[in-house]
Image (cartoon, rainbow, N blue to C red; front, side):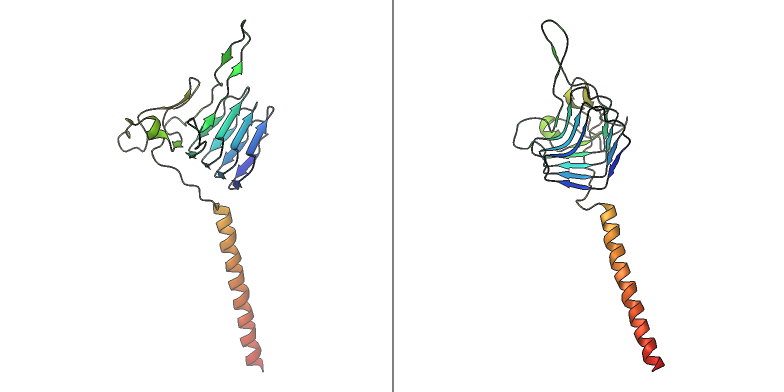
Amino acid sequence: MDNRIVGNNIVKNGNGIKFWYHISKNNISENYIAENAIGILVDDAYDNNIIGNMITKNIDFGIQLKCNQNNNVIYHNSFVDNNADRDGLQVSLPAYMGFGDPIEWLPGRGNVWDNGTSGNYWSDYFIRYPNATQIDGLGIGDTPYYINENNIDRFPLIEPIVISEFSSLTILLVISFFVAIIVIYKQKLDNGRQEERND
């Protein structure tokens, strides 16, 4: 619980990230999640925040929410070309079994797919909704992105939120490394000049 997975490259795994069995209140943000079988698997887990990630080219699904998952908050993510070889959604919410007689299969439970004003970017948005238009230059589509009756992105984004393959932390570390090399080199150069003067 209360884990933070932030600013990582998560590439070419079975499950890029997996939460299961009542793991809750975790934050997944600013990650580049690509070319996994499933980008993020939430299996019987709830109350997790999945915000501001680039989720792209995962073979099966960008996100799969299974079993008793609900109340996960998912927005400002860019879902790009997941499940590309199939004619289906980029995310999966398998049905779960009710208790009727006969047994009834119910649609995947409810999660939140926007923050009240903006949701996620879906690369297949205009394929699914060719008549959709942008609302008043706000960068929001006028047609909600329907996953199932309990899961609807009400404010889909027109443009992706770009998370580069190298996180800001990685870039900062690289810059710091080169600055340190320059400082060390300058100190050695200054020490060499001082020794020459002393001679």
